[in-house]
Length: 384
Image 1 (cartoon, rainbow, N blue to C red):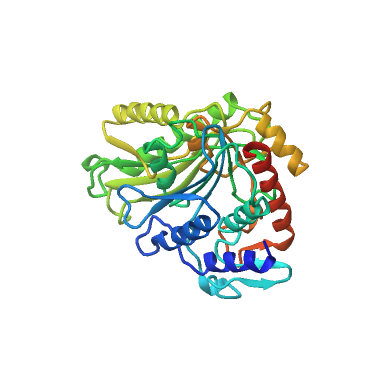
Image 2 (cartoon, rainbow, N blue to C red):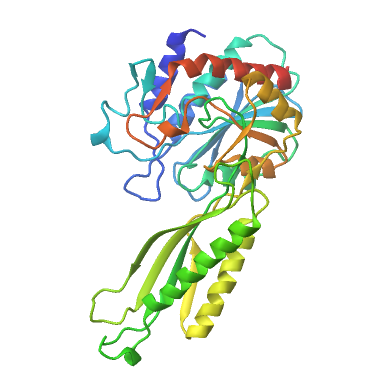
């Protein structure tokens, strides 16, 4: 692989918009990115499947396989990017710009840059006999709903055990990541009754009930942080953040309804479903005490906490190739979905998460060659 081919591939990926967002104003298809990857992988001898994501128009996943049998290696990445504020970029976000030993562009590090690394690593091993399959996954909508990963799970990916190991190439500075926190985002709504503010008995103030809800959520946060501690994380306890609140419409009216949105990031060993159920039970008690209606619903499906056991041969191999011990991060990835399919999983890729989701996103030149060597080393170790 010549450097010019790497740059051309990354340039084509960056110039092909594939934003995913909860907002219809921003949300885009990823079909063109998937087709680019399919063409390149077919040229390298992979058999390619392109699978629609159910219920998502023009959203696609790709599964590309080289070799056959069971117990192979997955290299996975998402094809979407977050939205962008063009006015704050020093250059067009969709034009790959080479400056200061960095490649600038939307998705350059998070995480379109991982795909040219995969292709270069495969080319480095051209002509090798694949004794175990190498599987490339490219997914949709990781940045918004994780619908691509959810679709793969629903479609029974790995039901025949074709994959035993997986690397998700999120930007980790080429440090193997074996743990991350989960995330759930929830909406709590209180339904009261409006009335003239001069007589509180005329209504049921939803904002006052929400005050009790907030106090209870903060008490629950304290209980969780006293009960769960995971020392591998910079912040070793679960976090619960009160993100936004909206309620009422005028100072002289009793507040009729109020909504709070919060997120909760659990550490490994905790379950989003169990947390959600405990919160609903607490809210039900408040609703009964105050004789009012409180509902809670998930803003998206959530991501479970992720942990790959430290004594895994896969973890040890990645640590040796990277020359770094495995670590933990606070951000969530598609790793729990692959782990739930019986695949030993790590998060490992070039670039820094510090550059993601902001103007002038870049991947440094000096991350690229080491990334190719590490991925080629993993392919050699687990497929050849």
